[in-house]
Image 1: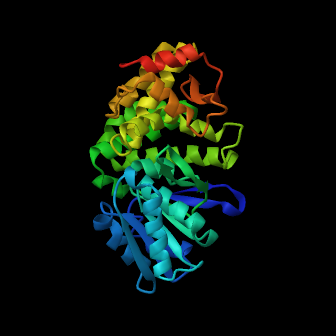
Image 2: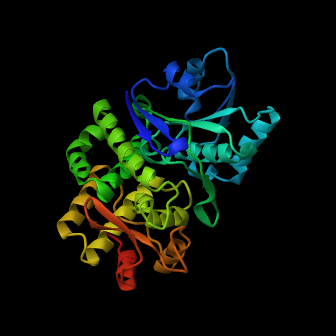
Image 3: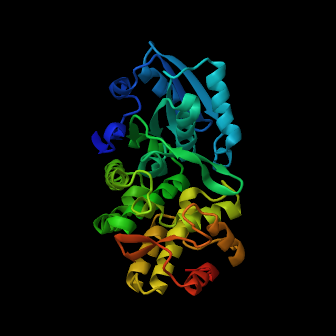
Length: 361
């Protein structure tokens, strides 16, 4: 087991990465100092891992499972209220501990419930998808979607710990695994060129769910994110943490236009990263061979590289509703090179329009 620390002063916490961790009672007991535990999970994950986690907690705990429907389309106020109602009906108080057992949707919505129930209760992230292990469970971003925008309602709220067990990735469908690889590739593109080169060689092993390759990918991704979050916990105007959103402004627009859940988040981000790389190339920043390497690695991860057919005006309108936009000007994460990305609004509108008009890269 590898332990990575998120250094945030009195909000610091560890990320545990390894095998057979969700059945490891010591980790849970080290972080749970209450008899009242609520496990929030979904209809897909519960049959696989709910009993394992329940047994690891031991017989001395009062355990309440909340099983939600599975899918991005359920990351909304109605589902959030389902959690609140279960907590209130079962007379949970400020001493309750929530465990988010699932992917990014479960982690985000459970974290937001923890941040807001009785003005804040403790919670643990136990991510069960690659995407949530390397990205959404780390850093304290929590929230839900709104019909007018993705992740528009939420809070920064740090967990007590993150338990990333790569064994659970063995049950992931291939499409979900690839969606997670999009966020892994992102770290190489924005700040770690050596990691990008490693991924170019390791991608076949990752696709085949090789444990050692998965552990290395999760560790290096989490180390990168931990460093960024420690520098810029609340995504300040400096733009350090914002670089973690490479491809996301394009990707969120795709998710919204196509209907939440029809494109997986990682699939939309993958196309968004190709679009950001193309725009960076058009601006004379990213070299043509670097664009080709970016596109090839994303394709090698069995991810889409071409956008769906969305009218340019609709695409622009959705991107303008992104949280990073200011006074109608779309701020984007673009690349100077592989391993170096910046948050900027300093680009030619014509180059952005050309990017949005592309049907194939």
